[in-house]
Image (cartoon, rainbow, N blue to C red; front, top):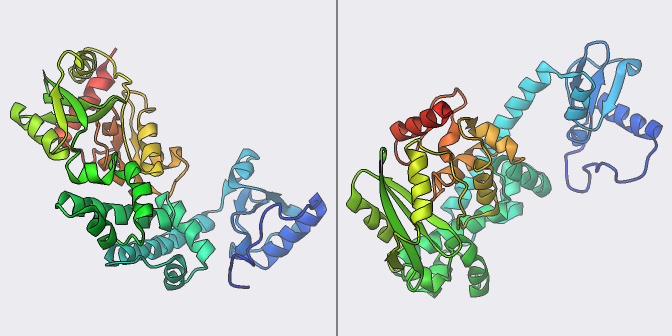
Length: 368
């Protein structure tokens, strides 16, 4: 079998074919166990009721007992089930690829200046550049370039917080030109780099607080919506936590202006009302925004696992990235990440402790 490259990988629908020509091509791929066709079609065996990818190492079926489908979903809709052997092999292959992707991420994170390029990462992983990029995105929900951009921005953000000037921070983070940094910064930082360096200097952020059964609730908002939600056992800790997040912002106590949102969240925490859908002002990657949006669509009183949430946003292999996006949520409660649990149903981590998470879920489940 030829090693896969972008040039040799077949493309579904690359050339018009009638059914007979297509089936002949697929049968040839099946008999050759050609892994280049994996993902383009599956074949089903009518005598056993199972379906497999073309590269399956199981016993070859008779031609008259074989049917072809464009996807596993199509095969299952026709009444076939996945082959157990293929499923085991796929899980083993997934583990191997996941380790290769993890090693690539470690190498990118360890790079002191310029990130390794796609070709170098793919070569180390033993894959073609195109295949490596597809696998990387399937597992993490973003491309190697997007992952590298996030790492660079994290370094720049930390340097700005440490007081470095903007030019020093962007070059130290690996940006070759200021224009690229300035173009990307608002999406990740939520403001211009100079403003972020100054702790959001000049940014007006209104905040308010209320007592709840789970502690003191603090909320903060920009003109666009909630940008921060916090629970703390110490009332004095609320403003300190907000000040640490936006050290130079113009914080304004706005009990009257934020009264409705504050009361809606407080009543929800105390079990007096249903979960409120409130406007939020969140900045993050496209992947993070997709996760946060999906969290707001989970009905109150129900939970999903990280894997189920990853599947819901169309990234079934990006479980770890989903967990990271949940952890980066700055408006928990307004974006209800407490509705995510481990695969066995047990509670996972929560920024305000598992006891508060359990209490929120119990309140939701017991609501009339």
